[in-house]
Amino acid sequence: MTRSTDILLKDFAAKKIAVIGDLVADQYLSGSIARVSREAPVFILRHNETSTLPGAAANTAANIAALGAAVLAVGVVGEDVNGDALLDALSNANVPTGSIQRVSNWNTPTKVRVLAGHQHAIHQQVIRIDYEPQKELDPPSADRLINAATKACESADAVIISDYNYGTATPNLFAAVKHAVAARGIPLVVDSRFRLGEFAGATSATPNQDEVDQLVDDGESVEQLEELCRRLEFNSLLVTRGNNGMLVVRPGERAVEIAAVGSLDAVDVTGAGDTVTAAYALGLACGFDEVDAARLANHAGGLVVMKRGTAVVTADELAASIAADLPKAVPAK
Image (tube, rainbow, N blue to C red; front, side, top):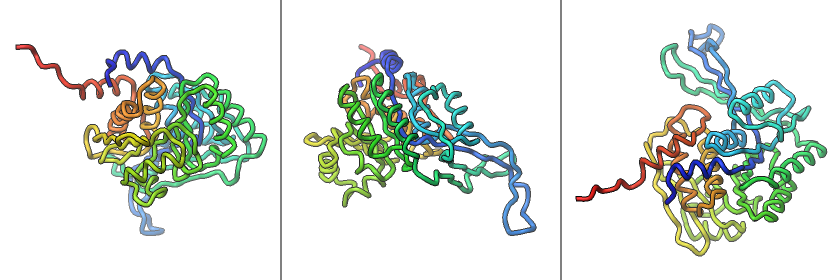
């Protein structure tokens, strides 16, 4: 990356990214262990607080906003308490909610992480409870979602599809988004949990190592990953590999390995993929090639895994990390 961090932040502020997909409420129920129950050999947790943060596509949108760009979040939430909490959390993260529709008889996807510990100790996650939609979107709601998605594409500088397999990123929606993006010649980045093969024709994708392992015989084979790119008609793949950094694969070009930034001992990897996708798509929107956009995302990922819970990386944090990694000038003798 050759741009100064000041120029980079100005580039971010001038861009608008549409994030379309599964909006999830990430809830954290925290409590202190009081005693052992007399009813069963289990601890009794004295509840302290429950907080709700944007998760999945909502977390991607929150990261875009934290990086200083404008964001259009498109998706659905239920007419339920968790939907209310998620919309409030998005508003608190400076993410506009006008393109998010409320759907009756739809459960807002929710992940409840129970954190427990002694009163003055760091609380650890002991269990996660997931609440998922029990049915597909009804046709009118699905049509309204597609209309909102295509409208968002009209003013965006890049588009992200965030698919957690909760029923938002349907084939019909993706086809409409792909057509709208192609008409404008802007990047379309897909982040899909184990359904990447259904998103052929996107510009790029950000799978992790486990996800590519499901698609090819050898997920560490550059040749097989290049063939996957060709088969899915992607310009590139950005494969995230945890402590092993990232790999950028582009058919017909040398693959580029990017070493992990910062500490290799992550504090919490929750939502790290959302942060990486947000920074990567924003880099592409700013005119970076895939490798430089990946380096940008690598810094963002290295920062967010050092934070507890579902978190975001700010523009200033990212700029400082990039600046610290730049070669230092050697004083003239």
